[in-house]
Amino acid sequence: MGEWQSPEPVVLKAYMGGSPDDFLWAGLTPLVCISQRVVDLLEENQFTGWSTYPVEVYDRHGEKLPGYHGLAITGSAGREDLSRSQIITKPARTPTSKPYDVYRGLYFDESKWDGSDIFCILGTSTKVVTQSVQAAFVRAKVNNVRFERLTEVETSVAMHRINN
Image (cartoon, rainbow, N blue to C red):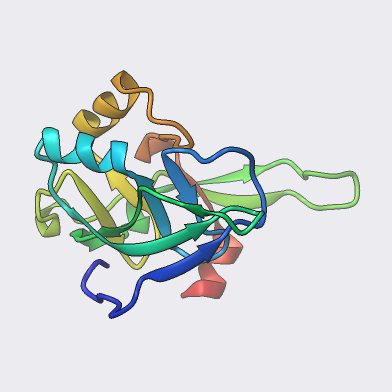
């Protein structure tokens, strides 16, 4: 969560997608790159709970994309609190699959939250922002990022059991 610093820039190469966006997601890894425009927005608004690290980003043609930074989330909150989540049975996704259960709602121990504007919930890879961060991103039309209310987050019960 933002503590480790690489002595060399982390190198990332595009494998899909179109033109460069404000947020670049690194597939299955938790690495996230942000544009200089996002860094400026975070600094101008004095948002807390984040830092950057050096990256080298290359497009699918091998051309270096300037102006990107790795985003490290330094803010933290308490552990996920499943006792506050609701278990909901979702319908089968295909005719040959079965219904499945999800936890609805992602809750955490607020007494352990450090008050940062950007933070992670211990035990999850979920990146959380305050409403002021979301509002600033929406006003600035930051692209390739989406927001979901924590009360609406759905997590597979089966996957949660596998990961814990």
